[in-house]
Amino acid sequence: MRGKTLKSTLSITGKGIHTGEETRVFIHPSTSGKIEFKRNGVIIPATISYVVSSEHGTDIGKDGIVIKTIEHLMSAIVGAGLTSLLIEVKGVEIPILDGSSLPFIQMFIDAGFEETDLSPTPSRPTRPITIKSEGSLIQALPFDGFSVTYVVSYPYPQLYMQFHTFDSMSHYSEEIAPARTFGILEWADELREKGLIKGASIENLLLYNNKGPVNEPRFKNEVARHKILDFIGDIGLLSTRPEGNYFIIKGGHKLHLKLAETLAKEVNGAV
Image (cartoon, rainbow, N blue to C red):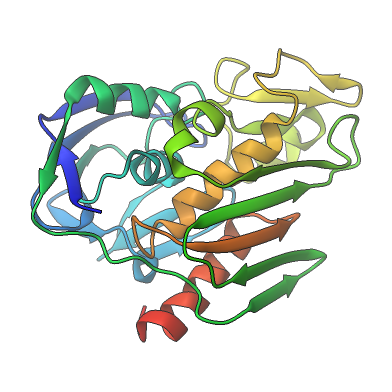
């Protein structure tokens, strides 16, 4: 697999789902062989070492400068096979857009792709790894390829046992990218008290109440697919070419990143 960047710079403007603040993002071609973010002159590598929070999103930071909610953009980067980019952020949080990774994929296609000399190093488990936490589980197995099965379970109609298996990154744009982030109406007050979801609306998420979805799902198992989208973005902080066979029950960013930290230490020798 050759390295890949964009042919031209693209720009994105939109509000963050948690801050509600408008951000402008410039995604520049690069030949560094790395995915790097830049804010206020500070370069923040998109690696597990720079994660500063996994509370309802994945935030990275360095020298007191934080960029919030990078997972949907990172997922699109991995799904598109991009390996070298400089992402310049004029604001605090990556725009939520429609709540999925599809707008990013479409913008990448419009900008065009170009091969680079630096090929990505795959990252994969070399032994079975199981991590459990508060009723959640993630298992990683050695595998020459990429496959993930995700099971979600919430005490709400259509969410009690929803799952999806994804095993071909070449189908990312159709199977995973369109899946939107989701919310449950009952959670709203608690999240707002934490200063979150200031920019959330049915325009950028799939909303559920105690009877089922409020707006129309794009897939019957859209929540499970979106969890895979998030997982790909989080595991992309190890390598833009993830490999392995993963099985996840009731996971989230904290569990994804705990696995990524374990893999970084055991496979790469450092985080």
